[in-house]
Length: 181
Image (tube, rainbow, N blue to C red):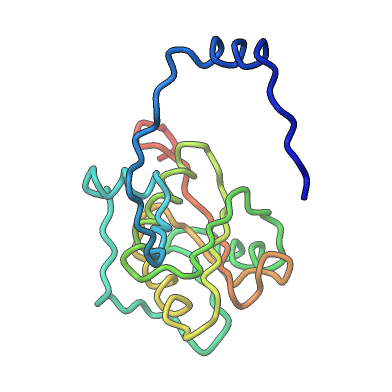
């Protein structure tokens, strides 16, 4: 058995002097429970939800997109060559949105936040990673994006940006007061 050395009277006095005025902590009881699912919505998406989103995506809208073929879309009035440029990777995405683990409602909010961020930051091309999984978001994301007036083109992403589990989109950056608009 080890003996603990005795504390010198001077050291004890110095210790008491140092802790003078200290008080005991009040111990709060903390009950740990199972962790809840973290909210994965970005703060920007939350802000848009609170401000009544500037755009609403409909679940009932069914665009004329062949879900069995490679996803490709160009808004009417724009050059169809944009789809080929997206396919070839001529437009590298400057923003990437990962939707893995989100439900449809959170996905809608994130898409609005992404398009809004692209407009604010003057970003022309973005990548939306929807994953494959049960193919719910894989099928719904293009339907949502076609509805937005600022999305001028989209195409299945090249392999380096996600392949079948992602979509590249082009955003119309023209502002309403712009003479080219």
